[in-house]
Amino acid sequence: MKPLNRETAGIKQQRPVKALQFGEGNFLRGFVDWMIDVLNERTNFNGAVDVVQPRDRSRRIIETLQQQDGLYHVLLKGIQGGKPTQQQRLITCLASALNPYDDYEAYLQRGENPDLRFIFSNTTEAGIIYDEHDTGPDAIPASFPGKLTAMLHRRFKHFGGAGEKGLIIIPTELIENNGDTLRHIVLRYADTWSLPQEFTDWVKEHVIFCNTLVDRIVPGFPQDTIEDVQQELGYKDQLVVTAEPYHLLVIEAPESVKQEFPAEEAGLQVKFVRDLTPYRTSKVRILNGAHTTLVPVAYLRGLRTVQEAVEDAQVGRFIREAIYEEVLPTLDRPGEELKQFAADVLERFRNPFIRHELLSISLNSISKYKVRVLPSVLAYIARRGQLPERLLHALAALILFYRGAWHGEKIPLNDSPEVLQFFEKAWQQGDIAAVAAAVLSNTEFWGIDLTQVPGLQANVVRQMEQSSKRL
Image 1 (cartoon, rainbow, N blue to C red):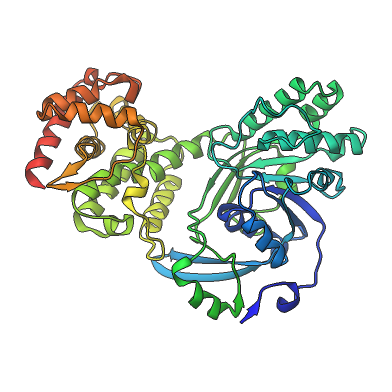
Image 2 (image 1 turned 30 degrees about the vertical axis):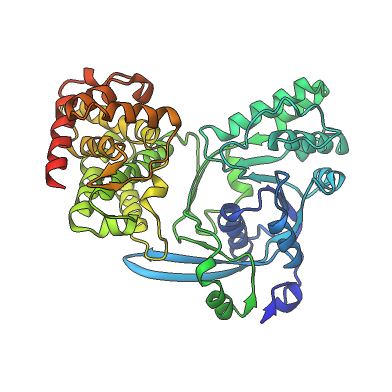
Protein backbone atom coordinates (compact mmCIF):
# COMPACT_ATOMS: atom_id res chain seq x y z
CA MET A 1 0.00 0.00 0.00
CA LYS A 2 1.34 3.45 -0.93
CA PRO A 3 2.40 5.87 1.81
CA LEU A 4 0.46 9.13 1.70
CA ASN A 5 2.47 12.19 0.68
CA ARG A 6 2.37 14.86 -2.02
CA GLU A 7 4.40 12.80 -4.46
CA THR A 8 2.28 9.64 -4.22
CA ALA A 9 -0.95 11.70 -4.25
CA GLY A 10 0.18 13.89 -7.15
CA ILE A 11 -0.38 17.12 -5.23
CA LYS A 12 1.88 19.88 -6.58
CA GLN A 13 -0.02 23.09 -5.95
CA GLN A 14 1.46 25.41 -3.31
CA ARG A 15 -0.82 28.05 -1.82
CA PRO A 16 0.15 31.12 0.23
CA VAL A 17 -0.08 30.50 3.96
CA LYS A 18 -2.99 32.60 5.20
CA ALA A 19 -3.68 30.84 8.50
CA LEU A 20 -1.69 29.77 11.54
CA GLN A 21 -3.37 27.04 13.56
CA PHE A 22 -2.67 26.30 17.22
CA GLY A 23 -3.64 22.67 17.63
CA GLU A 24 -3.06 19.54 15.60
CA GLY A 25 -5.82 17.37 17.03
CA ASN A 26 -8.83 15.69 15.48
CA PHE A 27 -11.28 18.54 15.92
CA LEU A 28 -9.35 21.23 14.06
CA ARG A 29 -8.33 18.81 11.31
CA GLY A 30 -11.90 17.55 10.93
CA PHE A 31 -13.53 20.98 11.22
CA VAL A 32 -11.43 24.09 10.46
CA ASP A 33 -8.96 22.50 8.02
CA TRP A 34 -11.83 20.69 6.29
CA MET A 35 -13.59 24.05 5.89
CA ILE A 36 -10.51 25.75 4.47
CA ASP A 37 -10.07 22.88 2.02
CA VAL A 38 -13.67 23.39 0.87
CA LEU A 39 -13.05 27.16 0.60
CA ASN A 40 -10.04 26.52 -1.63
CA GLU A 41 -12.12 24.30 -3.87
CA ARG A 42 -15.24 26.45 -4.15
CA THR A 43 -14.02 30.06 -3.78
CA ASN A 44 -10.99 32.22 -4.51
CA PHE A 45 -9.79 31.98 -0.89
CA ASN A 46 -6.58 30.21 -2.02
CA GLY A 47 -4.99 29.77 1.40
CA ALA A 48 -2.81 27.25 3.19
CA VAL A 49 -2.39 26.57 6.90
CA ASP A 50 0.69 26.25 9.10
CA VAL A 51 0.01 23.99 12.09
CA VAL A 52 1.63 24.67 15.47
CA GLN A 53 1.72 22.21 18.35
CA PRO A 54 0.50 24.31 21.31
CA ARG A 55 1.88 22.26 24.21
CA ASP A 56 5.04 20.25 24.91
CA ARG A 57 3.67 16.75 24.68
CA SER A 58 3.72 13.79 22.30
CA ARG A 59 5.13 14.78 18.93
CA ARG A 60 3.46 11.91 17.08
CA ILE A 61 0.82 13.86 15.17
CA ILE A 62 3.18 16.68 14.17
CA GLU A 63 5.80 14.18 13.02
CA THR A 64 3.23 12.16 11.08
CA LEU A 65 1.90 15.34 9.43
CA GLN A 66 5.46 16.10 8.38
CA GLN A 67 5.91 12.60 6.98
CA GLN A 68 2.63 12.84 5.05
CA ASP A 69 3.42 16.37 3.78
CA GLY A 70 0.35 17.66 5.63
CA LEU A 71 -2.04 15.35 3.78
CA TYR A 72 -4.77 13.26 5.41
CA HIS A 73 -8.36 12.20 4.74
CA VAL A 74 -11.58 13.32 6.44
CA LEU A 75 -14.39 10.75 6.36
CA LEU A 76 -17.88 12.12 6.93
CA LYS A 77 -20.33 9.50 8.14
CA GLY A 78 -23.84 10.07 9.34
CA ILE A 79 -27.51 10.53 8.59
CA GLN A 80 -28.77 13.28 6.29
CA GLY A 81 -32.36 13.59 5.23
CA GLY A 82 -33.09 10.34 7.04
CA LYS A 83 -30.61 8.39 4.93
CA PRO A 84 -27.07 7.14 5.72
CA THR A 85 -24.36 9.09 3.95
CA GLN A 86 -20.59 8.72 3.63
CA GLN A 87 -18.11 11.08 2.00
CA GLN A 88 -14.35 11.29 1.91
CA ARG A 89 -12.05 14.23 1.23
CA LEU A 90 -8.27 14.40 0.90
CA ILE A 91 -7.21 17.49 2.84
CA THR A 92 -4.48 19.37 1.00
CA CYS A 93 -4.45 22.80 2.68
CA LEU A 94 -1.78 22.14 5.33
CA ALA A 95 1.57 23.65 4.32
CA SER A 96 3.71 22.73 7.33
CA ALA A 97 3.58 21.31 10.85
CA LEU A 98 5.81 22.82 13.52
CA ASN A 99 6.69 22.03 17.11
CA PRO A 100 7.82 25.34 18.67
CA TYR A 101 9.55 23.44 21.47
CA ASP A 102 11.96 22.10 18.86
CA ASP A 103 12.53 25.45 17.13
CA TYR A 104 11.09 28.50 18.86
CA GLU A 105 12.69 30.95 16.41
CA ALA A 106 11.08 29.16 13.45
CA TYR A 107 7.73 29.56 15.19
CA LEU A 108 8.23 33.30 15.80
CA GLN A 109 9.19 33.74 12.15
CA ARG A 110 5.71 32.62 11.19
CA GLY A 111 4.63 36.06 12.39
CA GLU A 112 6.76 37.66 9.66
CA ASN A 113 4.67 36.07 6.90
CA PRO A 114 3.10 38.95 4.90
CA ASP A 115 0.23 36.71 3.69
CA LEU A 116 -0.87 35.66 7.18
CA ARG A 117 -4.42 36.78 8.02
CA PHE A 118 -5.99 34.25 10.39
CA ILE A 119 -5.19 32.52 13.66
CA PHE A 120 -7.29 29.46 14.56
CA SER A 121 -7.00 27.55 17.80
CA ASN A 122 -8.39 24.65 19.76
CA THR A 123 -6.32 24.10 22.87
CA THR A 124 -9.16 22.64 25.02
CA GLU A 125 -11.17 24.59 27.57
CA ALA A 126 -8.06 24.79 29.79
CA GLY A 127 -5.94 26.27 26.99
CA ILE A 128 -6.98 29.92 27.18
CA ILE A 129 -5.33 30.72 30.49
CA TYR A 130 -2.81 33.14 31.94
CA ASP A 131 0.34 31.46 33.24
CA GLU A 132 2.37 33.57 35.64
CA HIS A 133 5.46 31.47 34.81
CA ASP A 134 5.47 32.96 31.29
CA THR A 135 7.90 35.81 31.92
CA GLY A 136 8.45 37.23 28.45
CA PRO A 137 8.66 36.60 24.71
CA ASP A 138 12.37 35.71 24.65
CA ALA A 139 11.84 32.19 26.07
CA ILE A 140 9.01 29.99 24.82
CA PRO A 141 5.88 30.59 26.92
CA ALA A 142 4.06 27.55 28.29
CA SER A 143 0.55 28.86 27.60
CA PHE A 144 -1.13 29.27 24.23
CA PRO A 145 -2.00 32.96 24.88
CA GLY A 146 1.65 33.54 25.85
CA LYS A 147 2.89 32.00 22.58
CA LEU A 148 0.33 34.04 20.64
CA THR A 149 1.45 37.26 22.35
CA ALA A 150 5.09 36.53 21.54
CA MET A 151 4.30 35.88 17.87
CA LEU A 152 2.10 38.99 17.61
CA HIS A 153 4.92 41.04 19.12
CA ARG A 154 7.39 39.69 16.53
CA ARG A 155 4.90 40.55 13.77
CA PHE A 156 4.39 44.05 15.17
CA LYS A 157 8.14 44.71 15.19
CA HIS A 158 8.79 43.13 11.79
CA PHE A 159 6.17 45.24 10.00
CA GLY A 160 6.77 48.42 12.00
CA GLY A 161 3.33 48.41 13.54
CA ALA A 162 1.55 48.53 10.18
CA GLY A 163 -2.19 48.45 10.75
CA GLU A 164 -2.89 46.32 7.68
CA LYS A 165 -0.74 43.55 9.15
CA GLY A 166 -3.12 43.00 12.03
CA LEU A 167 -4.71 39.55 12.21
CA ILE A 168 -8.11 37.91 12.65
CA ILE A 169 -8.15 35.55 15.65
CA ILE A 170 -10.79 32.79 15.58
CA PRO A 171 -10.52 30.54 18.66
CA THR A 172 -12.78 27.48 18.81
CA GLU A 173 -12.26 26.50 22.46
CA LEU A 174 -15.56 25.68 24.18
CA ILE A 175 -15.64 28.52 26.66
CA GLU A 176 -18.02 31.44 26.71
CA ASN A 177 -16.66 34.61 25.07
CA ASN A 178 -13.55 32.75 23.95
CA GLY A 179 -12.29 35.59 21.76
CA ASP A 180 -12.81 38.27 24.40
CA THR A 181 -11.10 36.10 27.00
CA LEU A 182 -8.12 35.45 24.75
CA ARG A 183 -7.81 39.15 23.95
CA HIS A 184 -7.85 40.03 27.64
CA ILE A 185 -5.03 37.58 28.41
CA VAL A 186 -2.89 38.75 25.47
CA LEU A 187 -3.20 42.34 26.70
CA ARG A 188 -2.37 41.19 30.22
CA TYR A 189 0.82 39.57 28.96
CA ALA A 190 1.70 42.74 27.06
CA ASP A 191 1.38 44.66 30.32
CA THR A 192 3.21 42.25 32.63
CA TRP A 193 5.99 41.73 30.07
CA SER A 194 6.37 45.54 29.78
CA LEU A 195 5.97 45.45 26.01
CA PRO A 196 5.74 48.85 24.28
CA GLN A 197 2.49 50.78 24.58
CA GLU A 198 2.51 51.02 20.78
CA PHE A 199 2.22 47.21 20.62
CA THR A 200 -0.74 47.23 23.01
CA ASP A 201 -2.42 49.91 20.92
CA TRP A 202 -1.77 47.89 17.74
CA VAL A 203 -3.39 44.80 19.27
CA LYS A 204 -6.40 46.81 20.41
CA GLU A 205 -6.89 48.58 17.09
CA HIS A 206 -5.77 46.11 14.43
CA VAL A 207 -6.12 42.57 15.81
CA ILE A 208 -9.69 41.24 15.68
CA PHE A 209 -10.59 38.65 18.32
CA CYS A 210 -13.80 36.80 17.41
CA ASN A 211 -16.10 35.03 19.83
CA THR A 212 -17.25 31.74 18.31
CA LEU A 213 -19.53 28.78 18.74
CA VAL A 214 -18.61 25.48 17.08
CA ASP A 215 -20.60 22.30 16.63
CA ARG A 216 -19.49 19.05 15.01
CA ILE A 217 -18.96 15.61 16.50
CA VAL A 218 -15.47 14.44 15.50
CA PRO A 219 -14.73 10.92 16.81
CA GLY A 220 -11.32 11.01 15.15
CA PHE A 221 -9.10 8.13 14.07
CA PRO A 222 -11.09 4.98 13.16
CA GLN A 223 -8.86 2.59 15.08
CA ASP A 224 -11.18 -0.42 14.83
CA THR A 225 -11.61 -0.22 11.05
CA ILE A 226 -8.43 1.52 9.92
CA GLU A 227 -7.17 -1.38 7.79
CA ASP A 228 -10.41 -1.47 5.79
CA VAL A 229 -10.40 2.32 5.53
CA GLN A 230 -6.84 2.40 4.22
CA GLN A 231 -7.60 -0.33 1.69
CA GLU A 232 -10.54 1.72 0.41
CA LEU A 233 -8.49 4.94 0.27
CA GLY A 234 -5.53 3.23 -1.37
CA TYR A 235 -3.04 4.95 0.96
CA LYS A 236 -1.46 4.18 4.30
CA ASP A 237 -2.94 7.28 5.90
CA GLN A 238 -2.08 7.38 9.61
CA LEU A 239 -4.11 10.54 10.29
CA VAL A 240 -7.59 9.69 9.02
CA VAL A 241 -10.26 11.71 10.81
CA THR A 242 -13.90 10.61 10.97
CA ALA A 243 -16.60 13.19 11.61
CA GLU A 244 -20.33 13.63 11.25
CA PRO A 245 -21.62 15.55 8.20
CA TYR A 246 -23.29 18.23 10.35
CA HIS A 247 -21.21 21.29 11.08
CA LEU A 248 -21.86 24.78 12.42
CA LEU A 249 -19.54 27.70 13.07
CA VAL A 250 -21.02 30.91 14.44
CA ILE A 251 -18.63 33.88 14.43
CA GLU A 252 -19.25 37.14 16.24
CA ALA A 253 -17.29 39.53 14.04
CA PRO A 254 -17.42 42.69 11.93
CA GLU A 255 -18.45 42.55 8.28
CA SER A 256 -14.82 42.68 7.14
CA VAL A 257 -14.18 39.19 8.52
CA LYS A 258 -17.09 37.80 6.52
CA GLN A 259 -15.61 39.27 3.36
CA GLU A 260 -12.19 37.70 3.98
CA PHE A 261 -13.55 34.29 5.00
CA PRO A 262 -16.17 33.56 2.29
CA ALA A 263 -17.64 30.49 3.96
CA GLU A 264 -21.24 31.23 3.00
CA GLU A 265 -20.21 31.49 -0.66
CA ALA A 266 -18.79 27.96 -0.31
CA GLY A 267 -22.07 26.64 1.06
CA LEU A 268 -20.65 26.02 4.52
CA GLN A 269 -22.78 26.33 7.65
CA VAL A 270 -20.97 29.41 8.93
CA LYS A 271 -22.97 32.30 10.37
CA PHE A 272 -21.52 35.76 10.97
CA VAL A 273 -23.51 37.53 13.67
CA ARG A 274 -23.32 40.56 15.90
CA ASP A 275 -24.30 38.56 18.98
CA LEU A 276 -23.95 34.79 19.19
CA THR A 277 -25.68 34.55 22.58
CA PRO A 278 -28.99 33.23 21.15
CA TYR A 279 -27.10 30.55 19.20
CA ARG A 280 -25.08 29.52 22.23
CA THR A 281 -28.20 29.37 24.36
CA SER A 282 -30.09 27.21 21.85
CA LYS A 283 -27.12 24.85 21.37
CA VAL A 284 -26.55 24.44 25.10
CA ARG A 285 -30.23 23.91 25.88
CA ILE A 286 -31.19 21.75 22.89
CA LEU A 287 -28.12 19.70 21.97
CA ASN A 288 -26.21 19.61 25.24
CA GLY A 289 -29.38 19.77 27.32
CA ALA A 290 -30.87 16.83 25.45
CA HIS A 291 -27.75 14.77 26.12
CA THR A 292 -27.88 15.55 29.84
CA THR A 293 -31.64 14.93 29.98
CA LEU A 294 -31.30 11.65 28.12
CA VAL A 295 -28.44 10.01 30.06
CA PRO A 296 -30.00 9.06 33.42
CA VAL A 297 -33.42 8.25 31.96
CA ALA A 298 -32.00 5.97 29.27
CA TYR A 299 -29.32 4.38 31.44
CA LEU A 300 -31.78 3.36 34.16
CA ARG A 301 -33.81 1.65 31.45
CA GLY A 302 -30.86 -0.48 30.45
CA LEU A 303 -29.79 1.45 27.36
CA ARG A 304 -26.12 2.29 26.88
CA THR A 305 -25.69 4.51 23.80
CA VAL A 306 -27.32 7.65 22.47
CA GLN A 307 -28.44 5.89 19.30
CA GLU A 308 -30.10 3.07 21.28
CA ALA A 309 -31.83 5.66 23.45
CA VAL A 310 -33.37 7.77 20.68
CA GLU A 311 -34.44 4.66 18.77
CA ASP A 312 -36.10 3.13 21.84
CA ALA A 313 -39.87 3.59 21.62
CA GLN A 314 -40.39 5.01 25.11
CA VAL A 315 -37.14 6.91 25.64
CA GLY A 316 -37.15 8.22 22.07
CA ARG A 317 -40.62 9.66 22.55
CA PHE A 318 -39.59 11.08 25.93
CA ILE A 319 -36.61 13.02 24.58
CA ARG A 320 -38.52 14.30 21.56
CA GLU A 321 -41.31 15.60 23.77
CA ALA A 322 -38.82 17.10 26.21
CA ILE A 323 -37.13 19.05 23.42
CA TYR A 324 -40.17 20.18 21.44
CA GLU A 325 -42.65 20.74 24.27
CA GLU A 326 -40.46 21.92 27.16
CA VAL A 327 -37.18 23.33 25.80
CA LEU A 328 -38.10 25.07 22.54
CA PRO A 329 -40.88 27.16 24.16
CA THR A 330 -38.25 28.75 26.43
CA LEU A 331 -36.06 30.06 23.58
CA ASP A 332 -36.34 33.32 21.67
CA ARG A 333 -34.93 32.49 18.24
CA PRO A 334 -37.44 32.11 15.35
CA GLY A 335 -39.54 29.00 15.78
CA GLU A 336 -38.71 27.40 12.44
CA GLU A 337 -34.97 27.79 13.05
CA LEU A 338 -35.31 26.08 16.43
CA LYS A 339 -37.43 23.25 15.04
CA GLN A 340 -34.92 22.62 12.27
CA PHE A 341 -32.02 22.63 14.74
CA ALA A 342 -33.90 20.22 17.01
CA ALA A 343 -34.62 17.93 14.06
CA ASP A 344 -30.94 18.02 13.12
CA VAL A 345 -29.95 17.16 16.69
CA LEU A 346 -32.22 14.11 16.82
CA GLU A 347 -30.97 12.97 13.42
CA ARG A 348 -27.39 13.31 14.65
CA PHE A 349 -28.22 11.32 17.77
CA ARG A 350 -29.30 8.44 15.50
CA ASN A 351 -25.98 8.36 13.66
CA PRO A 352 -25.17 4.63 13.32
CA PHE A 353 -21.50 5.39 12.59
CA ILE A 354 -20.83 6.99 15.98
CA ARG A 355 -21.03 4.91 19.14
CA HIS A 356 -21.71 7.61 21.72
CA GLU A 357 -21.70 5.99 25.14
CA LEU A 358 -24.14 7.40 27.69
CA LEU A 359 -21.54 6.98 30.41
CA SER A 360 -19.08 9.17 28.51
CA ILE A 361 -21.69 11.95 28.53
CA SER A 362 -22.47 11.39 32.22
CA LEU A 363 -19.22 13.04 33.37
CA ASN A 364 -20.06 15.81 35.87
CA SER A 365 -23.79 15.45 35.24
CA ILE A 366 -24.79 17.58 38.23
CA SER A 367 -22.99 20.68 36.97
CA LYS A 368 -24.16 19.88 33.43
CA TYR A 369 -27.81 19.76 34.55
CA LYS A 370 -27.37 23.14 36.24
CA VAL A 371 -25.96 24.78 33.09
CA ARG A 372 -27.77 22.88 30.35
CA VAL A 373 -31.20 21.92 31.70
CA LEU A 374 -32.10 23.94 34.79
CA PRO A 375 -32.38 27.23 32.85
CA SER A 376 -35.03 25.58 30.65
CA VAL A 377 -36.85 24.32 33.75
CA LEU A 378 -36.99 27.76 35.35
CA ALA A 379 -37.83 29.55 32.10
CA TYR A 380 -40.65 27.08 31.39
CA ILE A 381 -42.13 27.68 34.85
CA ALA A 382 -41.85 31.45 34.40
CA ARG A 383 -43.48 31.42 30.95
CA ARG A 384 -46.06 28.67 31.35
CA GLY A 385 -46.83 28.84 35.05
CA GLN A 386 -46.48 25.08 35.37
CA LEU A 387 -43.79 22.45 35.90
CA PRO A 388 -42.00 20.75 32.98
CA GLU A 389 -42.75 17.09 33.70
CA ARG A 390 -40.11 15.56 31.43
CA LEU A 391 -37.21 17.80 32.43
CA LEU A 392 -38.04 17.12 36.08
CA HIS A 393 -38.32 13.41 35.30
CA ALA A 394 -34.70 13.67 34.13
CA LEU A 395 -33.79 15.34 37.41
CA ALA A 396 -35.50 12.58 39.37
CA ALA A 397 -33.67 9.96 37.30
CA LEU A 398 -30.41 11.83 37.83
CA ILE A 399 -30.76 11.65 41.61
CA LEU A 400 -31.48 7.92 41.34
CA PHE A 401 -28.52 7.53 38.95
CA TYR A 402 -26.22 9.12 41.55
CA ARG A 403 -27.10 6.42 44.02
CA GLY A 404 -24.33 4.58 42.21
CA ALA A 405 -26.27 1.33 41.79
CA TRP A 406 -29.50 0.25 40.12
CA HIS A 407 -31.22 -3.08 40.69
CA GLY A 408 -28.00 -4.64 41.92
CA GLU A 409 -25.83 -3.29 39.11
CA LYS A 410 -23.11 -0.81 39.99
CA ILE A 411 -23.10 2.50 38.08
CA PRO A 412 -19.58 3.86 37.47
CA LEU A 413 -20.18 7.48 38.47
CA ASN A 414 -17.73 10.11 37.25
CA ASP A 415 -17.86 13.39 39.12
CA SER A 416 -15.86 15.44 41.61
CA PRO A 417 -15.07 13.82 44.99
CA GLU A 418 -17.21 16.43 46.72
CA VAL A 419 -20.29 15.60 44.65
CA LEU A 420 -19.83 11.84 45.02
CA GLN A 421 -19.31 12.13 48.78
CA PHE A 422 -22.46 14.23 49.10
CA PHE A 423 -24.59 11.65 47.29
CA GLU A 424 -23.07 8.75 49.20
CA LYS A 425 -24.01 10.42 52.46
CA ALA A 426 -27.46 11.47 51.21
CA TRP A 427 -28.36 7.97 50.03
CA GLN A 428 -27.37 6.48 53.36
CA GLN A 429 -30.68 7.89 54.59
CA GLY A 430 -32.45 5.41 52.30
CA ASP A 431 -35.68 7.43 52.18
CA ILE A 432 -36.38 8.91 48.75
CA ALA A 433 -38.11 12.01 50.09
CA ALA A 434 -35.19 12.78 52.42
CA VAL A 435 -32.65 12.25 49.64
CA ALA A 436 -34.58 14.50 47.28
CA ALA A 437 -34.83 17.23 49.92
CA ALA A 438 -31.09 17.12 50.56
CA VAL A 439 -30.19 17.23 46.89
CA LEU A 440 -32.68 19.87 45.80
CA SER A 441 -31.79 22.21 48.65
CA ASN A 442 -28.06 22.06 47.88
CA THR A 443 -27.38 25.56 46.59
CA GLU A 444 -23.79 24.64 45.70
CA PHE A 445 -25.24 22.30 43.08
CA TRP A 446 -27.92 24.53 41.58
CA GLY A 447 -27.14 28.10 42.59
CA ILE A 448 -30.58 28.28 44.21
CA ASP A 449 -32.62 26.22 46.67
CA LEU A 450 -34.90 24.21 44.41
CA THR A 451 -37.14 23.19 47.30
CA GLN A 452 -38.37 26.80 47.27
CA VAL A 453 -39.75 26.45 43.74
CA PRO A 454 -43.47 25.75 44.28
CA GLY A 455 -44.37 22.13 43.59
CA LEU A 456 -40.93 21.11 42.28
CA GLN A 457 -39.84 19.01 45.26
CA ALA A 458 -43.11 17.08 45.41
CA ASN A 459 -42.95 16.48 41.66
CA VAL A 460 -39.41 15.09 41.79
CA VAL A 461 -40.19 12.86 44.79
CA ARG A 462 -43.27 11.48 43.02
CA GLN A 463 -41.30 10.71 39.88
CA MET A 464 -38.46 9.12 41.86
CA GLU A 465 -40.93 6.84 43.62
CA GLN A 466 -42.69 5.93 40.38
CA SER A 467 -39.40 5.15 38.64
CA SER A 468 -38.23 3.00 41.53
CA LYS A 469 -41.42 0.93 41.34
CA ARG A 470 -41.63 0.73 37.57
CA LEU A 471 -38.03 -0.05 36.67
